[in-house]
Length: 154
Image (cartoon, rainbow, N blue to C red):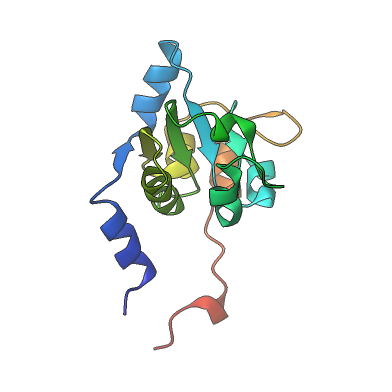
């Protein structure tokens, strides 16, 4: 039986990752990749990398295809564009990037460490209202919130 981390490790054999500073440098140099955030809408609303679009992991495949209620035209037309997939820590984004590669997207990478790493690197972030957030906001909003009942039994 495979577990979540096993699936991520397997996907990493096929998916390239970039670090937050690599993305920051590329954006500063004028690169315009699709910044695809696959977190849930509530997570995206709290904190995001400016310019990113939100397509939750659960509707990703349909969002990449024409003629679905979930179709995101920028993705459906973007099979040759550079895409940086983003999540909170860099695990969901690896799985999503792997799926995009399987679907024929040519230039897909995952942001290693996700928005947590982006925040730690003190890069620009906004919330759903467009307010600028600083690294301290990011630390608070991205802190793990594992409840006791979610912990592995001893």
